[in-house]
Length: 447
Image 1: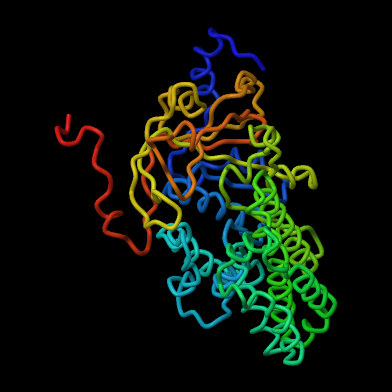
Image 2: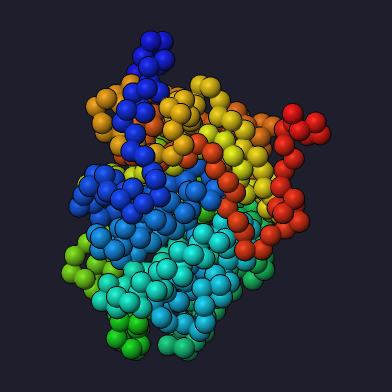
C-alpha cells in the first residue's frame, strides 16, 4: 500500500485517537480481552529478549487470561526440559523447594532471557495460583529445540525408571552422537559436509518406539502424572529428532534452519494442546511467549520474501482462533550481549529511526498504550515500514542492517502494545558489565 505525505503526517494523531492507555490498573486489558474473545491461542511477542516492560506486561496479561478466560498453559521460547522443570514446580511436583531453584535449568547462553526477576515473579505467582485453584491449574512449557543433549539425557533418565531394557536400546541409538560429545554444532558441520554419517535413522527409530509405547508407559505412572511424564519423554525424543535435522541444516545457509526451528515450535505447541485437550475434552487454551519475529505473521514481513516462515504464520494457517499481540519500544535500555556467548550488558537502545513504526508510535506523545490494529481508522498503518527487532545480541553501531526489517504491522499482528521508554530486564546473576551499564551518549560532558 502506497503512503502519502498528508496521511503520514496525520497518522500519529490517528493512532493517538485509537490508543488504549495503560495506567497500571487491572482494567488496562479489558478491551484486549474483549477483542481476544473465544480465541484459544494468544501469542504475546516482544521486540527484544531483554526489556523489563515486555516481560512484566506479558505476565500481567497472562494472569488475566488464566484467571478470567481459563487458559491452562504458558508456552515459551525456551528449551523443553528446562521449562518442564518449572512446570513441575508450579504444579506442586518435583524436588525444587522454591521458584529460584526451579529456574536452575536455564544455564546456557542467554541465561538472563529466563533467569530474570520478572520471570521469577511470574513463576512465583503461577505456583500460588495453582495452589489456590487445584481444579484450574496452569502449566509452563518450552517450545525450542536447542536442548538436544539435555533431552537425550531426559529420555534416558525416564526410561531407566520406567523401562530399563528400553533404556539400553535408547543408549545404543543415541550413542551415535558420542563422537562429538556435547558439541552439536560440530556434529552438524561434519555431517553436512559428509565427513560423518548422520544419526537421523537412529533418532527417528527412538521416537517411533516411544510413541508406540507411550500409552503403556503412561499406565505405569500414577494417574495424571504418569500421562504427563510419558508425554514429557515423548516430546524430548521428538525434540532430539528435530534438533538433529536442525543442526545439519545450520551449515547449508538459506532459510532452512530458521524454518525447521519454527516448525518444531509450532509442532510442539500442537502436541501440547492435544495432550492437555485430551484431559479436558476441549481444545486447550494456551498463551505463547516468544519474540515478535516468531509470533508476528511472517507473510506480512520481509521474512516471507526471503523464504522464511514462523510460528505466527503456521498457527494462523492451521487454526482459526488465534490472536497475536506484538510489543514495541522507542528508546531506553536493554539487557543484551555484544556477541553470541558473550556476557550480558545493559545497553542503550538508540531512538528509533524516523522511517519506522516505532517513530510513529512515539510521535503520539503517549508513554504506554495498546492498539487494536483491526480498527478501520488505522487502515493507513497497512504499509511496509521498518520495524526494529533486538534479539539476545544488540549491535547499535550497525543497527539498520542488524536490527530492522520491513513489515506491515497491521497485517503482522492483531494488536500491539507500545512502551515509549523502556528499561533493561534484571538478570538474576548480574555481571560487572551489567551493573556498570552503558555510559550516556553525551559522556564525558553530560550535556
